[in-house]
Length: 226
Image 1 (spheres, rainbow, N blue to C red):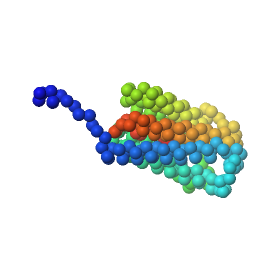
Image 2: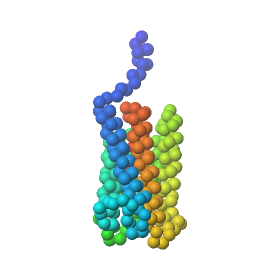
Image 3: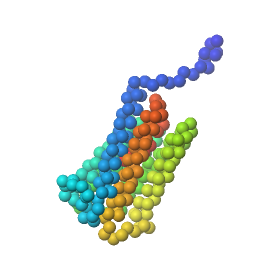
Image 4: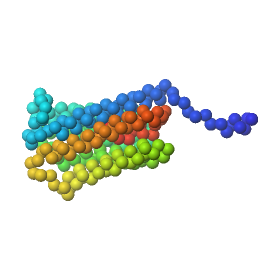
């Protein structure tokens, strides 16, 4: 009987600390998605080359850019926090890297855009964000063999992330040339990426809640931005 008892493995139960941790990361992912969505809307609703929006922001062009920078910086901070809180889950440093790149983009908007920042500099930061998230998505998808839906969604998100990374990398090396003076075309690309990031963040938050695991392997996968 003692030998039989020795073979029994008791499954770990959810502790109060683990529950709080999951809820905190869930909240951070939702907040990241919300901030990314707001940034995306502001990008996509820009209609003129001078940066005027289809809705009144109450800011000048420079003020609008600074406001975008503040939102982007906040999204990056939330992503870094989510990565730090999930630091025991493996490759969370990639999520932190994504948040750092997003935060640098926000700081660039706030403090340095008035001195003239090229789109290539911004594109490099987007590439860093997309590649870090893409790698993490693929790596995490491999750990979800028992959850085929989550595995396929993360795999698709990884493919899309690398697609955005390749597109912005093509802008950096001018393999793809934007129309001269077409700020709207540039902003649409930026808006599309942040919209993708928002969807990923919300999807990840929902997946985290639906799996209801004590230490979910997908706590720190997609960005921000979500």
